[in-house]
Length: 171
Figure 1 (tube, one colour):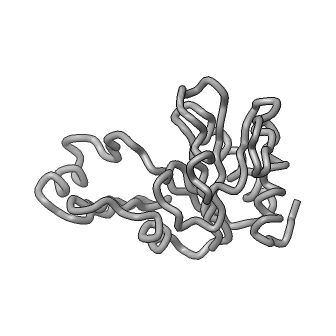
Figure 2: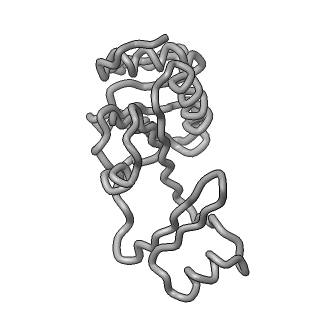
């Protein structure tokens, strides 16, 4: 499994891009999984529902299933799960598109989604040498020494990913 991590500030367009790339890669015949790192409290079940009640009672893991799928919730109170741990839980697939693991470097490819004016801080690539390209809608980025790719061209980004990871191109 090849892991591609998309990092960037909130509001930069990461989720939209990952959604587009999932479609492109799936339509090209790749098996794709996605992992999202949320920086706020996530609620995957509603208070009063059975699985919520099991977790509230202290269960460390709860699985909910129906005829079309299943989901597992796992408490990690002592330390947050790492990207590597989460990837290990996935069924085998070709690509894992990951959003938001800014502080981890366990991906095969790290790309920054950057839009000017979204946040008044330097782009992440200026301090994170693991980022291998910047995906942006800016005309240019002065002084940027890594590839800059048009954020509004997800097919071009998919080809870049395929080339960089030596994937047999199917587009």
